[in-house]
Amino acid sequence: MSFRNLSPKQMFEQMAADHIPECQFTAKSVKEWETWRAETLPRVLQCLGEFPPRCPLNPELLAEWRHDGLRTQKWLIDVQPGLAATLLLNIPESLEDGEQRAAILCWHGHGPFGKEPVMGNDSSAELRTAIANHNYDYGRQMAQAGFVTFAIDWIGCGERNDTRKPQHHAPQSRDWCNLYYLHATMLGMTSISINVSHGMAAMDFAEQLPFVDAGRIGTMGLSGGGTMALWSSLCDPRIKATEIICYSDLWRHFGYRDLNYCGMQVAPGLYKLVDLPDLQALLCPRPLLVDVGANDSCFRVDTAMACYRQVAAVYEVANAQDGLELDLHAGEHGWGGNKALGFFQEHLG
Image (cartoon, rainbow, N blue to C red; front, side, top):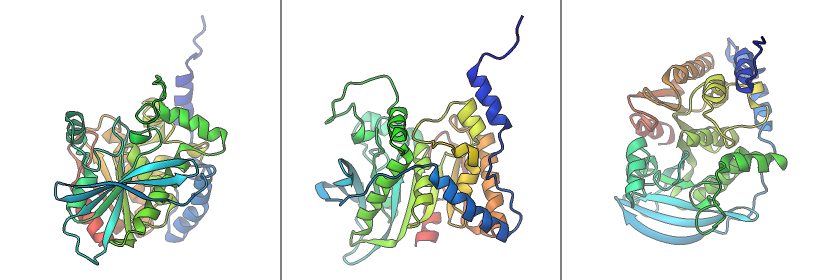
């Protein structure tokens, strides 16, 4: 009788368990860290493939309203030839004429609503539940605290979901994240490069606003939004501070073991080069706040904290440990909200 393995999943799990990334951080000095970062970051960014071409934004204001002490605007901008995005902008009512504020790009996570709950849309019971379950309205809360906040949908989410109005393409059972990844890689791109490029267009729009200080832009995001906050910061030096919310773990565990990832989080050859802690640590010495949920059922606290400790080791070697913070909160998969205000006030002003 044969006892040889017939499970491809088990094969991949073992391959991941045995794998040591080529660019795993091993530096012991500031000079070695500088060399590691200078050599690793370009190789990692190459994994994303090509970025879509840019185009004029052609911004169009669709509507403006007031809610919860904020002035909210909905804009339409072109993000690449042949594709636009709706952008929500939260402006504090306390903003005075001629004043400029720091701004935060708020990325949403997976789910049916895209950017809407993040920016404070609580117009239905379903949206209110999503906000309550994940403390999800950080785009509203940070604006109420005085920041200008803005957000767009990833491709396949919110108003850019191909099964929703006005697209009306036939619903199907496959994940748009995975389908768009397949489409993108056939063209030499990735979902990440496309979404990051669209986020850059959103920042282009925001920094042109007269009440936004273009030198003080940060980003934050939950789960898949943490993925986007991380990659946006790696790709765009305009981002001065980053909050990654419940997107800390080890690829062999959350990816290969738990299957807790999709096409919008990956790039060809990425794990060959780095694990997720190395990827986050490439942000060093820029300020980074990491949220970990002690009861997170998506990214388990043991491996999430293992990831954080590896990132902390890099910041320590680089003598940048004052720029790294942890919000280990008692909640599930969601925003802790305990340190964000102080973190962004310190690093964005």
